[in-house]
Length: 246
Image 1 (cartoon, rainbow, N blue to C red):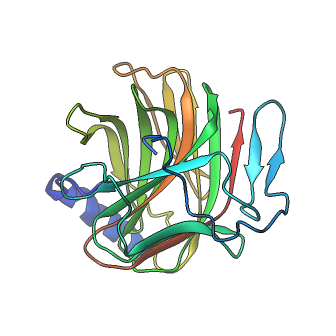
Image 2: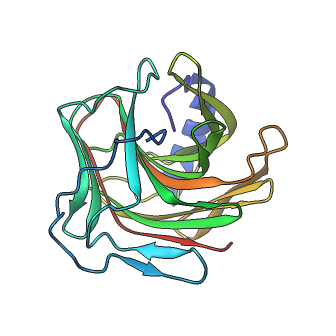
């Protein structure tokens, strides 16, 4: 969830807390830093067709990244000096030491129309971040973005770069879940983009399904994102990502 006006979600936040108590835009030349460039181990396990499971044991061939300033929503020309993104200990590790750094890693080697994305994400930083999954990413047309905050709130957006190099986030759906394992913990997130239907799963529980009849993106790349806000560091490692048919 990009940190937009949350006051409208305050009643929902209270309800969620009550439940808990009761129970590179793909820019040429912009690529993810590979901290294990010399590791020739097989990282991606091919599945049927162009689908695969990435275990992040090798390099980041096919992946590129970009960074959005969380205050201005401008795409940055270069990476902040206090962030790193790379393969470390079998994870795609986002290490964001600065505030309001929204970092995207996009798999640009293949486009998909109907697709399912599954990830295992481990939070080892503060309890103030977003983990996001992206489908149907296209530099010119935009993308769908599913954001899940560590506090259980989620958003689904249509996002697109404007002519002044800003990302415009248009809300499609929002809500909250008590299925997120908060704090320093590992969560499983899944999204399905099938036809006009967008579905979010949190720890194998279907959390939200909605039809998009406005933006109707047809195909594009998949991607991952981690966002920091006012409390840092935001440190999240993706142990694996699986891209498959819905």
